[in-house]
Length: 363
Image (cartoon, rainbow, N blue to C red; front, top):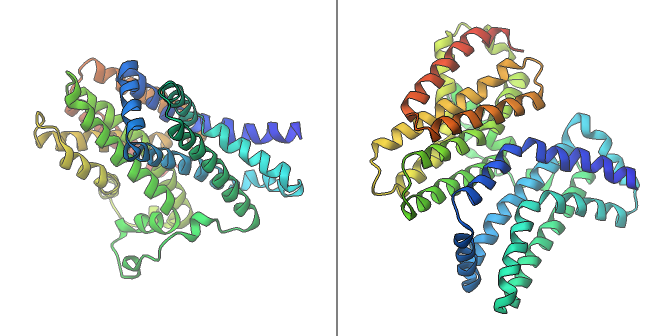
């Protein structure tokens, strides 16, 4: 049993943290780089004094729990992870404990913050809040176990059953919407979690901006978060092309038109976040800043997408390392007040030259 736990730890826990290292680092910097300990305690005390605010915290944790659960269920569907299905040979109690351990270890981001909240709540006598905070995490673990067991029993997961029947895509649609049809039909959970998370990130930065003497660089960091979040969409885009559109490279379409479609694709992907920024834009920023912000996020997302062209064999570990150092370099440039429009221009021109050079050489 010890060997089995080690295998599952390496395949489903360690791999999760490796693939989400940049996301977790960003959350850490966001929470402890911009907010002081006194501000964290003030936020926690506000949540503990209002069940409504505590419910908002639980919803945020729920989205993260869905992200974790989705990662494990998708990993179980991968061909090279098929050996993990042999866990069905274990007795149910051992199997449930194994799944619970995987889910609990992957939920450490929210669980450790929950322990911090409990430490604040206990001296104040908030026993009901403590029970709710710990109970929610127990619920997340149980739900994870149920999802993983369901994934073992059948090829179609519960998440796949929740996919709605999109009537819109039953009508003829232009080619640039084909990928969105694939996303909504095959990757509905990814779209919902990513877009809701993106809107929440933008809303948080808009709320944070007037609380201190911040400048446009704060939204530069927000753009880095949103750009990194498109990494999964780039992965799906490459998979979609390889599975369904291999013939497209032989079509008589100019490279500039193909590149334009790619830009349009990322523009449509980022629509929810841009709308959230337009609604919650701080008074000290003009609406022209939205255009500059959108230009930056699209150019950064394109650069991340085209980084895959540097790894023809699709080495995920190498691409994640490159993504980490690339995003870190952009963050440092923003810190030193490199204008967003200049960064955007360099990124989009560099992406175009890379696209032009590597498009027909990338398989």
